[in-house]
Length: 132
Image (tube, rainbow, N blue to C red; front, side, top):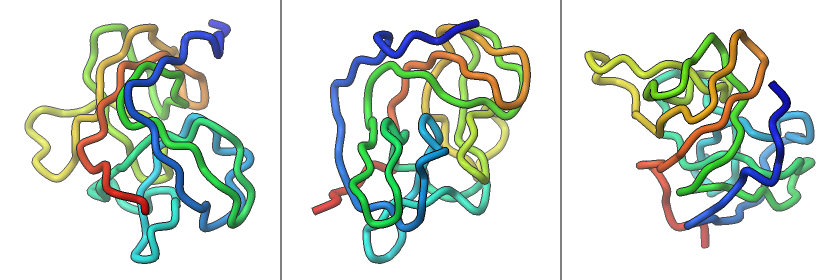
């Protein structure tokens, strides 16, 4: 599937400085560090705050989708209609309803068949915080 960037729409978006070079991590989930800088989750239980929409290098501004529709890089096969989470490393994965340590961040609109492919998702990040 070829994901068209025109599929992106946002109801809510924020910006914050990137804590490292994320120029190759567009459409990955992100969390915030104590200095309110964007970084990739290092643990499945990290609180995701948004999806990186641009390709920021270290200390550049990262654009974060908070609520809206966008492509996401998957870590496993995901079908349309399935609920999703952000896993360690920032990839979109299936959300297991019995897992009380992760956050459901959305639902798949267009599926993806395998790790590294892009699907399209309706996102709403529960961990979104003030980045100012």
